Image 1 (cartoon, rainbow, N blue to C red):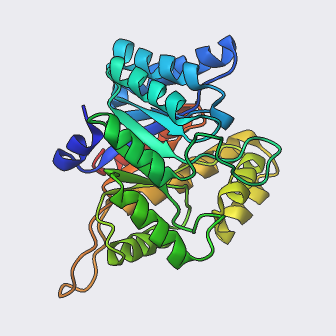
Image 2: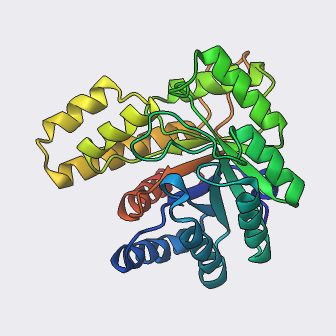
Length: 303
């Protein structure tokens, strides 16, 4: 199933992101989380590529197993990091051979210890190049990333949108946003993207906070902002894991409910539609996202 086809016939979609574990114990945790989420009937799940493409083979194995054993549509992440065109071509062909038809095309972060991304000899420099490269190799559905609060390396919000438009024009079918905590930031970004001529669906990326120190590191890396009320609430938990967990879950549930429910405003104005979908960053754990789903169901929000 191509994700673009699901988006054409179902709104909203719900998806979950996982990363390939490096140990057998970690893989057991991942699989348990996937099995617990399967009854929720996610529209798709994505599996990241690992720093520097270090988990390339494991990503291929996991997405194939998800499709084969759980019947959930998987999407494999693919990056330009540390790979030549020939190596990327082999990986893309291997995905096709395993009937994995959805790919999230990313430039990728610089390898650990390096400040800037440098394309390998014979490799690709930008996600837009990777998108075009994948498009040439088969009838894949291609997703890509976007940054509501501007990519950390972008010169400005305007230039970031120009690069995003270039990437979409190369053959992107849908976008997944980097995590954000202020819905107004997402809606403003979608408005600006639409004005720039970007018309593909933009899924909202949501990460329920389960560890305050961890989310601080993530937001510093990707340029996202933690709103003052949420930051103050997390700081007031004094490191109590249960308090942090339920603070994160309740905040994300309210955030998702607001994203999914079109606002009631001026009856003479054009209402803003609910988001086309929500992509949960799970960190390979299911309790938080399962709790959010139950809260949304109890609130009679379309899930």
